[in-house]
Structures are given as C-alpha cells and as structure tokens.
Length: 256
Image 1: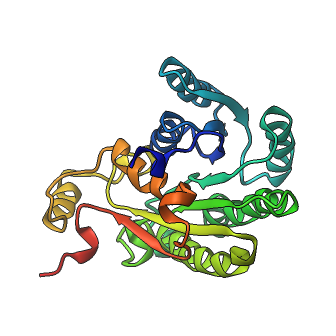
Image 2: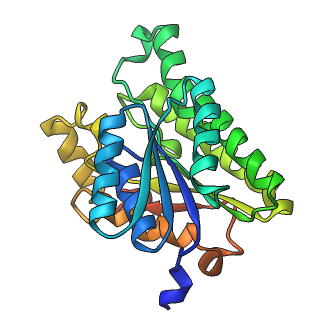
Image 3: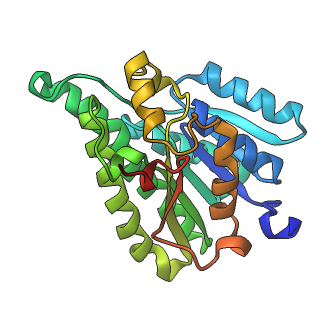
C-alpha cells in the first residue's frame, strides 16, 4: 500500500501553497516524496511552509507569484522549470472571500475575488498545463473547491459563485486533458479554520455550521492531505478524473 501513494520523483506546484489549507496539502505531498514548489503572494509565509517541509526531511522552495497578475505566474513557471524541470502535480489553492451583502456588492470587489478564485486559477492552469503537454508529462491537477460550490452559503455570494464556476471548469478540463493523460479533479472541503473564513465565524454561524455537520466539528487542515495525495498519485487514482472529492464531515449529505 505504501507504494500506491508514493510520490517520489514527482514535482508538485502548489499555487496558494502558503495558505492554511494549501500549505497542509503541500506538506503532505513532500512527506510522500514529492519535490514541492510553494507559490504564494506572501513570500514570508511561503518560506515558512518550505522551512517546515525541510525540517521534516522534504525538498521544497518558495516562489512569489499572484494569480491575479498572470505575468507573475508566467515568470514563476520559468523559475520553477529552472529549479526542478517540468512538473507532474498542480495544486490550485489560492482563495479570496468577502462577506459583502449582494445589494452592497460593487463591481470592483466582484472582479477582485473572481480574479483570484476563478480567472487567476483558470489561466494559471493554462500556463502550467501547456508545459506538461509539451513535455508529454502525465499528471494531476487538483482544484480546491468548497461546499459553497454546490449549496451556496449565506454571506459569501461572490465566493460561492466563483467556486461553482470552478467545478464546471474542473469537469471541462478533465475532458480537455484526458487525451494527454492529465487528470483534473477537485476537493470540496467543508469548514476548516482557514484565514478567509474566520471573519464570518460568529457564534451563531458556528452553531449553524455544527447543526449542519454530522461530525459536529471543524476539519483540521491535515485531514485534506489524504484526499490530495490520493488524487496526485497515478497509481492510486489513475482512472479518476472530472470528479469532486468531499472532505466535509458530512455537510453535503445533511438534511432536516
């Protein structure tokens, strides 16, 4: 079983790998043998993830890029290629949230969130997938979606819309890249203590979440590692593409 999830010899690019969830997943990749490029807007938090990986005996390097500025993504792709050659795994984990009510929403805020959560991820994927195809490199692209992508959540209108669109993108690209043996899947996390959702976790909202989560608790970031490693491994999930893997404590199956 250990060889089934072995990522030794693989190179993983973790976009948003400096975030709470992205960093935890990146560390999981490294623990299972992958060489990991940690890419983020905040180079200091990216360096901290790298330090944690190296302390555990893994190999990683921090890179600065902002998916809302695609010129920086194109540059960082060249930097990663110089460091590690091509790549086998792309994790799309950047994210931006907002609690602005719909009737107060301005086009500037809509564009800002969509530039990160949707447009940035789509065109960053284009940059990295092109190189994988040119190198005849089979591999795995993993998008981080959200429970709000299937059941829109109150208080996060734009975020929910962006993640619903990302689900559609995931399935479209799964079909697009299948002839190149590149798989595209998404993880649908439930409620994790990530930076972008802490600001909406009032006492009443926490109670509402717990009432709708059969396991009656928040997820721990490390609990996303198994799902991501499974989707990253050709041996474990070589025939899995265009699918959504829920890690949500049962949130998606809850009803009255």
